[in-house]
Length: 447
Picture 1 (tube, rainbow, N blue to C red):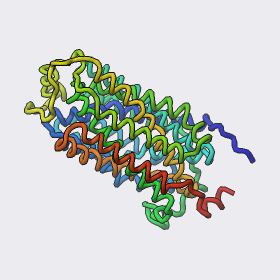
Picture 2: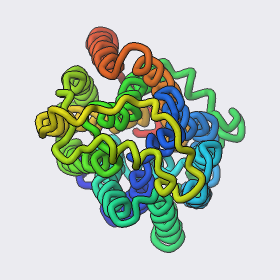
Picture 3: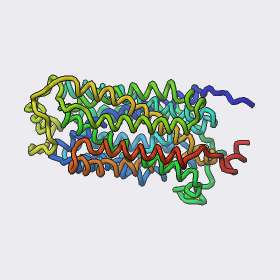
């Protein structure tokens, strides 16, 4: 029988909405995290530690939360994730030291499985022909959140010049997502479909790791994310030292990223995955990342036309930047001089960020879709939780490793090295990662 290629939007749109609101809260603070550290005189490595706190905690929490959602359903685990995320944002808004900033990210990371649980819910209501499109819908919500969240950050920073307010707005977004889950979201995993294997094989569902196809995809997910998140976590420092951009300028870059992600994942990934297959989507994504990462390293060192070094320095050291308790001291990040101001650097990075964003928009839905095709439907939460934990492992290592390379070998070194690594992944994928067949257990379930 021919499969209907259209998503059930009556079921999918509520999931899209709650992911959008969750990501909106995250994207409000993400462009600002490096400023929290920089205000305290942090080095690039210490900035990396602030960024790494969240994914390190997720490395522990995500596999457990994913397996629990297979056993108890998606809705209760979504609520636990969203409540703790809200608490984490409130703590971030109240933080008056770097230690509290890190603690707020750790609490969110331990229990914040919002996105992977939503992906499992979409996997519950899609078949193989619509899986990539359904997972791409969460990516589109992610992209739209990255448009709106940074715009809200720009407005709040312009009006208040205070990093407290974006964190509290993010907490309000989390509260809205909690209400959406309670009153709008319908459980996608009824009791009769819930996993028995999680009771037999522990919360980590280690039996999934015996599947060699899943292992290959997990390793590819980790390696590409190691490079991409290294780029993402260092972008704020790079644009600060190269273009003199503060939170508002970096938020604008995230808006461009968001527009690109929405366009790719809402409009193109479904038709492309059906026409070309997920493997070709993954190959194309890796190629785009290679080109983008290499070119961004050659961004002209030219501060934007409105840059004034003394003003930027005062803002970074100002007590008002955190609202209270900021320590005025030496800024460890090298700021550009006032000479040679212009727009070429900003225009360059705005253009080059597009292929990077397209590649990022394609690769994770493609890999996750392939993973779900290697397991039974009652293991979607577990395999996507494992996928998310591998992403978190990469996210934990990347900013620390990238910060070390940045600090010791210069601002362009992480991006050039990242391009070389992703290029190697592309070659290895073309040589060794061929289209996979379903395991016999999955074939039996789908027949």
